[in-house]
Length: 263
Image (cartoon, rainbow, N blue to C red; front, side):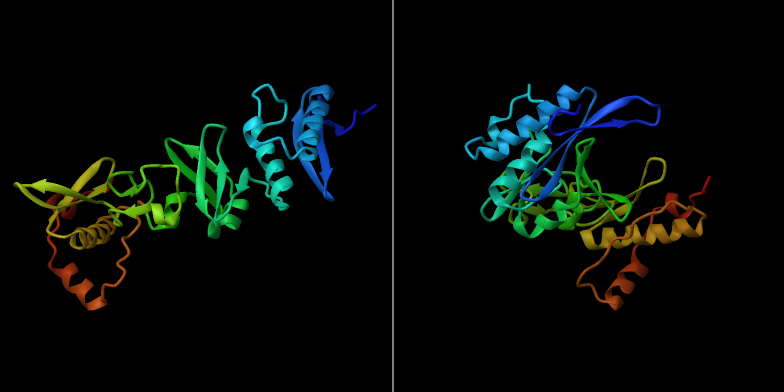
């Protein structure tokens, strides 16, 4: 006989497990799968208590709970804000929090609410990703930051909190791929580099724009040399086609790039 909130199920290999679920405000909510019926029932009891008692807070979650912290966040938000999200979001006034874990809480503007309500954030090697149209993209790309941009070099968090992703808190320092501000012959300039099984220097240029266009020019030259790697071109907002073409034609490119041989 099934305990309340549990449902017996069977895996392809024939082994038995138990699903836990609850219905609240006419919404049927899955609470997870468990190896034992008693664990599934315990998750149901914890969810019931949480939903019935508004005095229980997010901070009251205990590591000994059977219910996952992610479900705890989802249910608490549904109870308090009367809107169900399948991702661990809690809506506050003028902002919302996305909980990667009990220890890691991200802050976003309300305008991003429905994007993250349908896109789960994952973390890998210090970068945060969402799956969008079948691709893994960094969440910083929503701010115009290049893929795998480096904090402190390509962008910075104005208030020092690198979990605060409100637009007003993010300043882009370098919008271009393959461009880095350096000191060369005791003068500040911009180095343009491209990754070809290791980084190759394209050249040093007086402005970031020229370095970015040089990067694009290097891509074109490498493609002519038979390189098939899928590079991302730098986009130039506010640059007229004639100005772009003029700079493109004048920029000098490293001999190593000009004579590179594709393997």
